[in-house]
Image 1: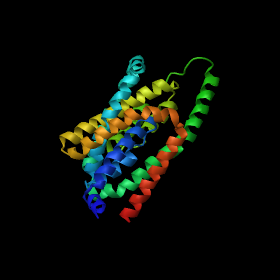
Image 2 (image 1 turned 180 degrees about the vertical axis):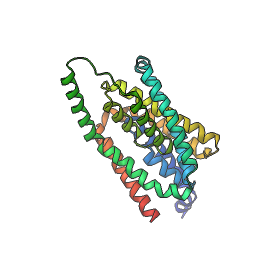
Image 3 (image 1 turned 135 degrees about the vertical axis):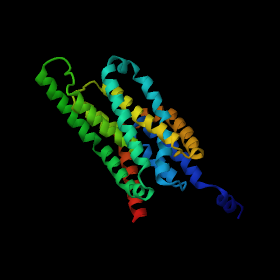
Image 4 (image 1 turned 90 degrees about the vertical axis):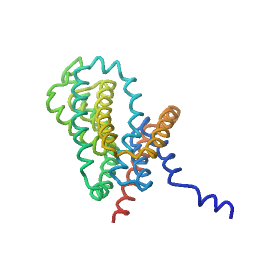
Length: 270
């Protein structure tokens, strides 16, 4: 009786939120897709869906800051491209955040399973698409002889980056892979340069959304701070996991979690 009384007084939603945010920090650091866990956990705290998404964006954004330091030399060497991608991130992220805040709660709740399904599908095709891009890169090198092909057509790249950044500001799960695919299609071949430009665009798109959500009062801070701390600890603890678990296994886990969450929301909204 005593144990059942203790169990009844424990807020299991809080415990799951902290656990989910910790695991989200781990996943974001090693594979991406942490929002598949942290966003539904925030919804489980009975926050309206738009506020849950805004709170999730603010909670996970600080963890992205560390990735900029890792690529600062590549950003410096490709400053003009980084500025282009950063501007695209700011414009698209602003538009996505504003549209989210003007989306009715019930409409966004009905969009959630589709957004989760789309993001999980992005992760599911990341392996085959990466292999296809590698073949495309080899074919370019064979045609060009030696030397890296310099990316051209800056305006189409910029407009496509704005579109992806809009998605980042609105929801964002899986956007990192979309940026990487886009940059590869436009001729970037060095994986460190691709990652650096992806980080700049993603960080600024999420960062401007971060500010908009805070200024507009959409962040539920008592949940946000708990999730932020847990995600930061998870990201710090992820180094060991990244070395021990193969990336395909991690990505497969992300896809399973994403599809499972999408199915649950489709059932819930039915």
